[in-house]
Length: 227
Ligand SMILES: [Cu+2]
Image 1 (cartoon, rainbow, N blue to C red):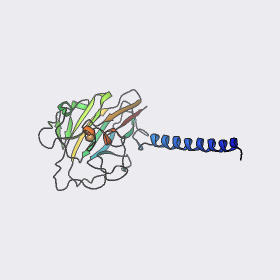
Image 2: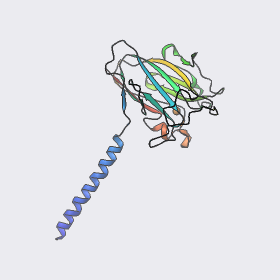
Image 3: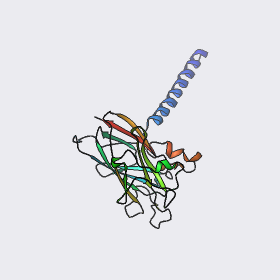
Image 4: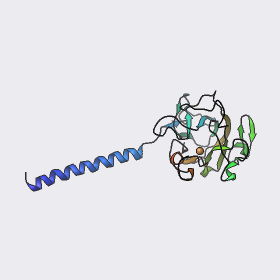
């Protein structure tokens, strides 16, 4: 084999190897949790009901110990995702079952409820416009949509409770939890609106702000508002 032939084969193999690395990297970067569709078949003017959970540890997948949100799809199946297709200019009625323990807030401002219908939330049937995280079980997570001015602090459960959820998500209704309900209206303008938790709940990461706090499907996601 001539030197140039060897060089040719080597260059080809090298190019294939580079191609594979790029392909695998892009596939990894593009992978994301499923999007739950609340928009298809939606009748204009009707509200959308959405049920979510927050859990202290999701219990399976790539990061079983991470805190997480979960979404119940309209067919009743729970999905480990934070991505939703939502109809524009529509009232979203959220029921959020909160199973995680809480703590005081580093920023007490996040204990205020705003941007929801009535600027309040219902916690176990009681209307609340401010959660004082320095008393009781503190705040576990928030549901916040910064670009829409929505913030909902999620009152924590007692971490020492006998029935504290310790199984893979979704947690059962028999486990200790708070039922939090609130409503907000999606914008008229279609597009992707990021939402996230603002409690630094990523235990084991720098200042609690890494890991699940930075990962779609756990503590942040997108409202994909469609017409
Ligand atoms: Cu959180």
